[in-house]
Length: 92
Image (cartoon, rainbow, N blue to C red; front, side):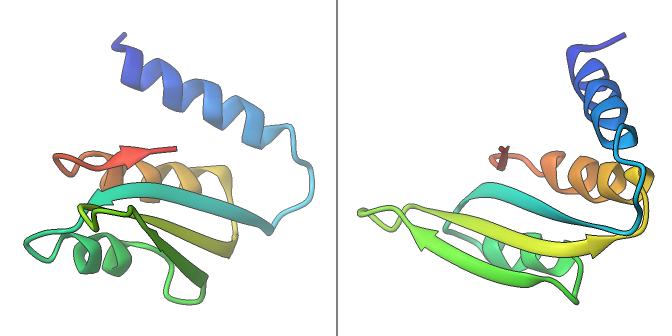
């Protein structure tokens, strides 16, 4: 099993400890500020979420935070996997 897959399994196990769903989850990613990447990541995050952005001083990267009510651990994993697979994006 790859280390990425192990990370998602660990995250899923932690999420499943929560017995009350839906729950508010905070997604956080660091995205290169080029070629529409920020918009690409935002488009993959839950539309009903609350967004905040923080730029690096050099404006080369943007930290995107999205807090959203999520229905299940699987829905959180799906969003995280999809965005983390984009080259250059760092998942926090």
